[in-house]
Length: 319
Image 1 (cartoon, rainbow, N blue to C red):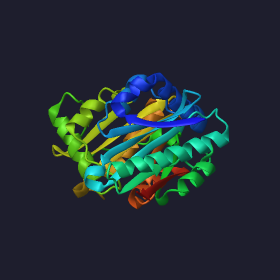
Image 2: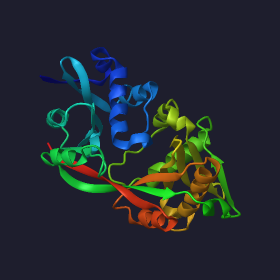
Image 3: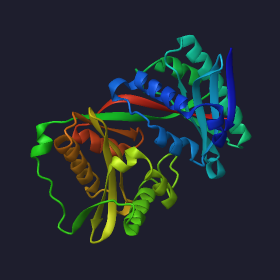
């Protein structure tokens, strides 16, 4: 009754209407996150999934010849880390729970098979956060195949007047500059900051200029605020944030170059972002995600008033 097939990334558009996959993903996210769900647009989906050279295979689930779910295999770390990543599964939430469980299990099994075919020693997967749609069942299914290696926290800060009234003082020899892709020096500064700041983070793959070029085509990236902090004309750090929903702002990324860490620059950039989101953009709350093992960041966010409200589980399986 359930058909599971896998095909190369560049063939998926011939198997099914791409809009089907985007709709399934959006329905799935809406069922999980409600009104807080980020909504994918067709162009961004094509760039991230169909034009991304690291996406090697799609795993398509069909029911009575109708696409009801999918996942993809990201092989960006296979060549040097021996690790592939399972993105999804994204399954139509309107299906009966028993079918969701069956399809999820089938897709995971096929993903492990594909990871072995790619010569990946391990496959990583991420679950939904605690308390979301069928999260307990999904965690149980993943634990049939995977071992939990880490957790991540979704943290939330409630906006208040105090963020608007506080004065933020910049160091006298500093500059805060808005990133523009057209500026080659700013591109170099962002690449340097991101690659140095996240070099030791689990699963990080260095970004390139081509990556930045691709991101420019994604609507949410273009609309996000990207600021670079310079000290005596040397880049110190960067922060990226935006408003994916009228209900909340999101801090996508913050990085301080290692030699400048521990000097208060991270807190400075966070205060600037929070003030902008709460007081100028008018959102009710600010959210971010952080690895549970990143103790320094957790302390900073907690002191600012962020609280943990969801847990993400990160799993890995040997192939």
